[in-house]
View: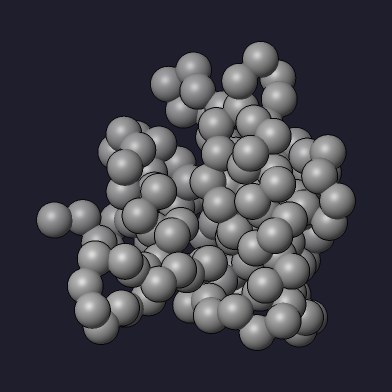
Length: 136
């Protein structure tokens, strides 16, 4: 049984006249190397089952009310940024980032803060989609 439920941030597509919602987190993850995709998926599966998350896997990233998942693959520090949802034991993934020089890019942090505000006001999210199930 899962202790936590993960959700992904969505955005409207801009490609046609009848916009659909695009899973921003899945889109980011599918653009990464397959090994990194698998590690991110495994980390989320693992975190879903733990009632309390160890700080070596989830920590404050220096942006107000935003947390980072800490995943390393191929020498790259992947940092999906997210926040707690309004309901108990809900975590919303807001944006994917890569740590460089020990820091999260400011643009990613600023976007995460804006997205958190939107989501808490009712912006659409969807239950987390794993890259493994969506590869073509």
